[in-house]
Image 1 (cartoon, rainbow, N blue to C red):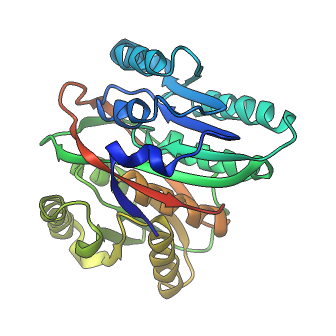
Image 2: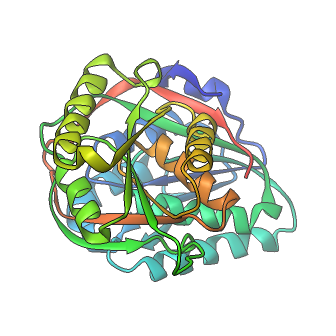
Length: 313
């Protein structure tokens, strides 16, 4: 169950003793909200991930985060074009943590990881969960999102660690958790040419903002116009990954025997929900549709609120 709190109050929910803070430097100003609010917490270990292929637009924010923590963070390179290098970097970090031969309380700011890098991180945390005493996920909400978030598609691939078990004689069923990027959704559907399509819309009562729900619903209606005759519908939570996971699993159970692929194109909370499905059901594949271009100038406006939730992996 998630808890919505003001970011200015966040430090009272966090303990620095025997703790590890993880975040990602990004072109989005939202990457600064949580680190700056927690700069006075005495975390034992701090890891800031940055994308090597987007350093030019994330460098200033990276410097602000490291300055806020007085130069203490360990800076780690990940990549938006080479998921294997991202996987290896995560492994290096957690292998070092395991060498301490104790458990840590983890606080993970998931706000500005890409969906793919977040899912790979989830897989690695599950692999090395022996060093996790507790896991608290924190997500900065958006006050507004620009009219366009990304343009074009440069690659569509299965997420490393979530390839699923596919059976040649079974039909393919693609589940798309929609967000605001219609082009990415269409490109994904056209790439896989599935026998069945399920289009997910975030539940109105579990949406971040009413205006976001209305905007998302318009995108779903557009997809329904294109693929309506073969589409099934799915409702899921944008605030609670466990609820989102359960909605997807129940939907899969009701759809019959198929090869299921999930394309998480909604917010990072629901992306975690899709990842939890992949951890629980080894037959499910998760895919990532990589944009050719991000709106690095005005992607989003950070809110003064965040979601805080405990999960077990």
